[in-house]
Length: 381
Ligand code: DNO
Image (cartoon, rainbow, N blue to C red):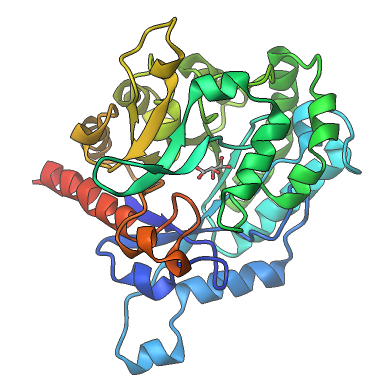
């Protein structure tokens, strides 16, 4: 297993590579060219520049005697253009053109030594929360999802809330260009069924997987977050059966999962440990984190689908992070893992100048890594 840490790039993150270097156990920087929109081609030169920065050491680091370096083997994400999911032209691109661009990205990333590309197949937008700085009983803050609020909310209101609440930083999957074209995209999904989505998904996979095989780059889909349909849009990577179906759309080993266990567990009926065991062979990357529901599960109580993100320790919430890490360790898992979102702690919570991109501060993710590695190491003994 290789432990990773998501980094948004110099001048685009409150955390530096030097900060991450001091977290014991981190080998992989999970990165992306965050200025690229879905459907855009990534230039080889830009890719190589990012990889060189991540894998190298600055002159001042070398002078200080720093020797620890990272690999840049995981990219999160190369986003999928809506035309691919819809199976028809939108926003100036048609599916075949968007797929050709995606193949070029795979080829170029492969040449730069990238081994895994993460993406999601959610219609319209990526992950969803209703509060980014929700207070927890210990005085920290964390990402929060209130289901009752979402049930009453219009997608327009949701978008303005996301824009106003994110410290002026672009959240992954909520890029300004995507939000600007929101109405057009929303309109295009009217009447699109789950079956239509799977058909378009299979077309995409059958096209790109041979390129993945040729350049030795594995694709890893991130589950829908939260893991159920919202606003009537067809989500196709939510349930265990959906994950199995996506894998069966193209049986290549290169068609795999980025099993985000916080996202998967947002459906209170899901068993995260069982999912790890079931899909182990095709999990190329995994996000391990914990969430805590507001109330015990009750089909008629929307609050039982509301949750806060919490510390990674199993007893902090409803996700069995110990069982998850044990399952990975027992299988001698050789893929990548990262802690996922963390709470905002210490000066991240009190000093406005140090407020991180929601969920992506330094301290709680560093603590989370130590907890996850502790379980992993104990299982090796
Ligand atoms: C949120 C992330 C997601 C994830 C994408 C993958 O913080 O887990 O934005 O990166 O869904 O494409």
